[in-house]
Length: 416
Image (cartoon, rainbow, N blue to C red; front, side):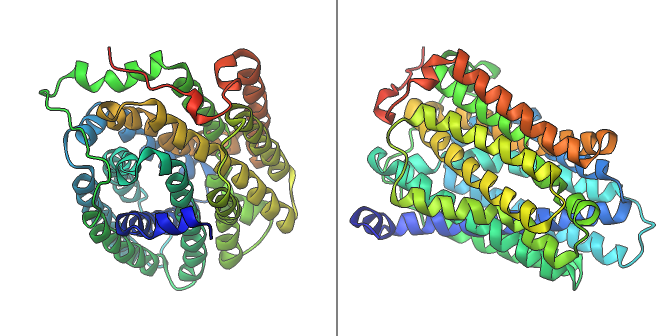
């Protein structure tokens, strides 16, 4: 561990931030792994996975105007903690549904959809507040390392959650949801222990549509922020193969619950290994070209995953694709706050969460529909090919992104 890393982790607020992120990420990855598997088991239809993804996406779009305003108007720690209470409630609702279902597969699926919609609404407000916390926890000079460290904690959670889900599913989905509720509850107290290193500059204007839409207008006039977010959004949209892992595990690979849990954890393993490397040596040179290159790698290994019928090949493809995605996510997560004034960061992050975070869910919908009508191989490999083509298009037609060497090349766009 370097002296800089030691100094970073020696800060109590940094530790509290990372602890909360790790617990929240574990709860989400555990719950979603169970939810996608349970929904597919109940219906036997890949489209069900797509519908769940869509129900998580819609609230982020509908609430984008107010979620960003809330993150800029109120203390982001308290907003995130309050939304955690809602996550606990949703996990308990999933628990109650699963207890009622038991082993009966001839049951209504709509309550599962309704709870998913509620969870998506809560996350639509929680995510912008959480993502806009990092620039307040440490000074700007330490932000790339905190972003990398935060990414590591989240991907460790993305390993622990699905692996735990795989084992808990052998006992029952209800038990898994109950464990998720407990993990969510544990993630709230550390948020309230964070002491800001950089004071949050809260907006004081009365809420209005014009004020709320400033985040969208800022992104539109900032070529670097717009291109970084758009590229990641498109990659996530067409590379939504993770949502199809329950189908891949059963129909393409023929494995059971425990193997499914490990396969679902494979992206977390790849991202975790890469995140540890980035925490030691973050990307500080050739930032733009590196971002474009890793998106191409991400798409290429989705093509490999789409044609794979061997468990080991699928596992490795997921690891490499996730490693590339980790580099992309870390670069974007540093570029956006570096180029955005703090007074607008919550609203910009809210729009970003629709572009990126919610695109995971929209990507799940796209993958579910494609899998139903084109088959799983075409749905996954076709999305990978589209991602490669789009990344090459950005490299050719967005020179402002391609020419970024260091983060110091990025200037903060001031409000107009």
